[in-house]
Image (spheres, rainbow, N blue to C red):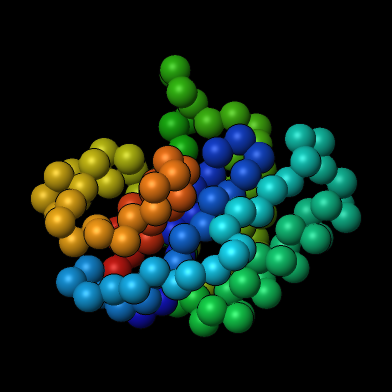
Amino acid sequence: MVVSGIYLKANDARIVTLVGSRDNHILRAQKFNKLSLPKNPTQGDVEVFSQAFKAYCADNGIDKIIINKRVTVGQGAGGAGTFRLEGVLLAISPATIEFVHSATVRATDRREVAKKAQKPGTKDLGKAYDLAYEGLG
């Protein structure tokens, strides 16, 4: 199975793709790991984002996409940027999208940290990796 984890933060979508299962997976090494929309996007900006995302999914044969579930109220609630990105991805995604809560990711990380040897060192890509890992069968 080919699963992409997409970590939405502000106007950026950090993307990590994994292939395999939780016990035996590989990180699909790509130079492409971030898509962005400007703070005040035009239709053209959204179209460029959409085409780049669709091309990425087609090139990598993405089966499933896992996105961080946005907090909607209170401190740390997702802003307009993540809301906008979420809507665009839901509208254009050629693959099934699932949302995963951060508490679920933390629980899995505690149980299965030894299986995550390939996790990227940068914080945002690490979170995208964790999301992709949640989608592996």
